[in-house]
Every structure is written in structure tokens, then in C-alpha cells.
Length: 256
Image (cartoon, rainbow, N blue to C red; front, side, top):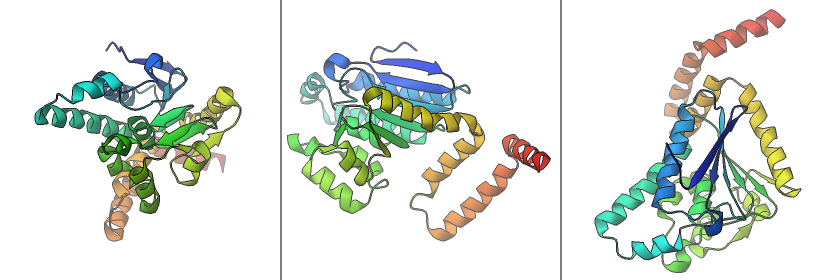
């Protein structure tokens, strides 16, 4: 499909989705939300893509909701608001569940909905200049949808302060609180070099094993131990029957 808010690049097994509204600091509107879901689903189904990187053009990763869109929201009916909220939930869920590792490339502000986009990615790599904040409460709104993911990612004692205060924090504090995987030095070059060091091993690994591992990470979250072990045993047995596993075992035995 044609995208008006995004740019898509595919190279060497990596699909990169660029939020491409630099003049609006990549602010989210309904069009971008729907395009982002479509892009994630398309790259998720592309067998040549082994990992997905989400980044932003210009000075910001994503500064939250578009101001013009917020103004129009004031005139929405209840049904309009429900439909709009469902679209955002579907997009965040698509990023969270796509069977490819997702890496947020955060080089500037990631605020409100933009912080939500980073939250649902598997790996978050941020430059020293990046900042993060669930700032919705400042304007009487709430980070309702992203909280469903946030409380599964960081301890509640951290999540509560972040969403109740709306405070903006720098990249190093975000890492300390569990929102960021790695903080990089060296500006954009250092950021991209580290992302490459993350994606290279993913590209080299078994696609089916990576997909099944991500599926398990999602399914095991909050599952009781007995159910988790039963599920894990069944997934262990299933994985042994995949072509990648059988070929990998054969190569290992041949070397030994």
C-alpha cells in the first residue's frame, strides 16, 4: 500500500519503518496509526524481513498526538472515540505481537503516544539525547491503552509514578526504570551502530526459533506456573520438529 505518513526501507533482512512527519515531530493522527499497523503487518508477513526497526525522521522519535487531531477529537461522539481508541489499541497490539523482533530507535522526544510506541517494542535503543514521558495527565487525558502493556514491562512501582506524574525523564533514567534496553553514545552514528549489533545476530539466527520465542514471551506473561510449564513443554516438543531445529542439530552433530 501507499504510505503518506511513513517511509519503509528493507535491507539485509531489516525492515525499517520511519515515522515521516518531521515538521510535526512525527505526531500521531488516525492516518499514521492505521498506516503503522498496516506497515507492521506487511513486514511481519515478509519472509525476507527478520527484524523490524521503528524510528522517526527529524528531531523527534514521536512527540505524541497531533494537535490538530486533538482539536477535532473534541467534536467526536462516543462511538467516534471508541472507534479511534480501538484503532490505536490494534496498532500497539500489532507491534507487540508481530512475529519478528521489534526495535525502537529513539533519538529525541518519545512522549505520550510516542512513548507508548517505544513501550510496545521488544527492544528500545536510545541515544543520550532521547527523552521519555507518559504526559497525558497534563492535559486531562490518560495513557489508558499503553498502560496495559507498561505494567507488563516494568514494576508497578515505576509505572505508577510515570503515568501519575506525567514527568519527562532522560534516556539514562528511562533505562534505570526498565523502559530502555540500551543508551548509546556518539549521536546518531552510535545509535545506528548499536542497533546493527542487535539486529545482526537476529538475522543470523533461526527465523522460526526467534518467532516461537517471541510468541512464548507474550503467552507466558502472567501465566500460572503449572500452566506455563505445560505450555513450555509443548512448545519445546513442537520446536524440535521444525526444519530449522532438525537442520541445526544435524550440523551440530556433524561438527562434533
